Length: 355
Image (spheres, rainbow, N blue to C red):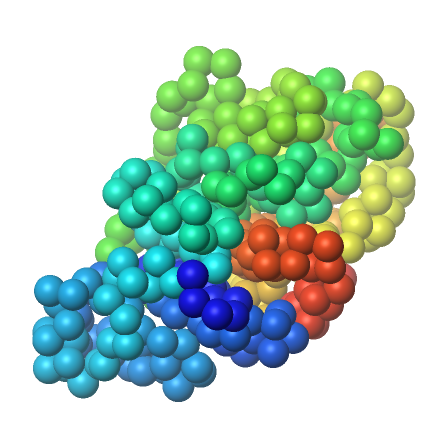
């Protein structure tokens, strides 16, 4: 590992690009000496993005055999791909599903004695211990070198449960049901848009889609086993994911108390808007790279309580912002295990209490 705190991000997609930008913008407060990033393909239309990240202060790394191809397009790599991993303090993998596990076997295990920690985003089950900031921080130990940052919708479901059903480390959730209504693709993407709603299948016999499976295993790191089930569908929109939730509790709760619990949670934003368009546009105007970093945005007008113990409503998932916050928190924890929390204050401007 080179001298200083170096964070290396692998991938420049919908999570990688804003993550690199935020790390650069907050570099001094986070006490990071250098930010590097890996770009896989030399694509002319990606040149403005790469140059923008370089102008923010990040250094480009590419595969050695592609160096000349990047240079011909006016992008100048500073490091080759493996060199950037070897000299890093923390590596954050933001590549598509499955690639993180492949990179772990091919590269990360090789340098585990040099690099302090490795993170992987999204659906990289078995990469390492699952993590969502504010949910299972106490489950992460200094022995956990490989961390799996759960998906943005898993973050959302996790904080719904945490807010309404977990009290003094005790689980009061009797049953949780969730419908994840996913955007078809990000506004930065041309591919995979769909012309109409597309329903998903229930691949897990007990819990439905991976969202419930992931949140189950996330809470299991705390010794809590949940009764949860999720379904999913894609909507022909590029704005935001939204979730319908139904939480049955073992204890009584009123609508006012449920609302107050959401308001009091510092990782939850509340809104009186019912349109994803309005919530998304607020994030565009007031977030970093258009992203707010809250775990969820609760639509207050939709909250309903049945039988004094069942809370039902809708919420919106900040587009990857919650995953980005968890990634930076885990990174700072690797770099400054005894003082990381105070360094995260710089991100407070993007944790909004109301949208």
